[in-house]
Image (cartoon, rainbow, N blue to C red; front, side):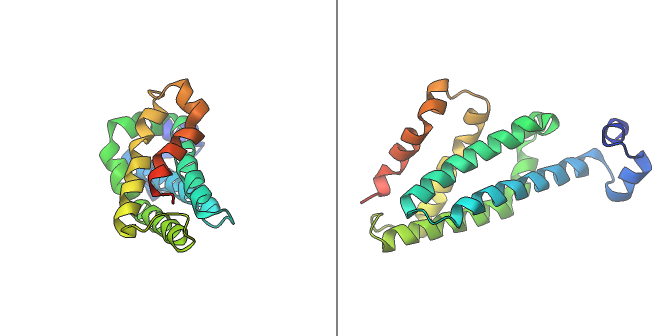
Length: 164
């Protein structure tokens, strides 16, 4: 808490007014960063793109934004990998909102005959978990530079199964 107080140029007493320990501060940082993720995804969600382009951009924005959030924040980066369960508990509401957005994009795509008919609820959950499953390898750069260079093509490949 002393180091946090120094870095934030606040007194420790001030910090203790708002937070009882550093875990609460970490949780607050995670929640703030998740709000940023949702804001970035919402920009794609409300765009005037076709459903297939919107879904592709949504996936890429998700990956790039999570990578940006984790990389710009050193302590978050360390704790993201060591206490993933705390991060996951904080993400529950955001996950639900993301799945709802994906569901709407899928519904639009089916209605516009861009996507095949499907179980939209199940497909939204599966697509969300596909995107989310790429986060850690993408952040850790276990996915090679060729992924970074070809991510548009790779995301196209992932979604080809739902396109008419």
